Image (cartoon, rainbow, N blue to C red; front, top):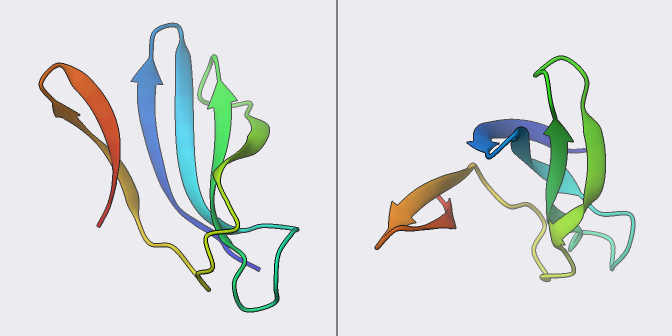
Length: 77
C-alpha cells in the first residue's frame, strides 16, 4: 500500500532511492520498511531488497542521508 517519500542520492556511479514502503512479510499493521532502488540514469530503476524490514512498525517516515564525520548514515525524520 505504501510506496512514497522517495529520497534520491548519488552513490558513486549509481543513484539510490530510499522509499517508505510496506514489506510483503511480517504481521499486518507492522510491515513498514525501508525499500531501496538503484538507477544509472535516473529514468530506469531496479528495486532491490529492503534495507530494513520487520521492525514492528506500521509505517516509517521520510528517510534522508546525512554525513557525519565523513560517513553517510540514514536518518528518519
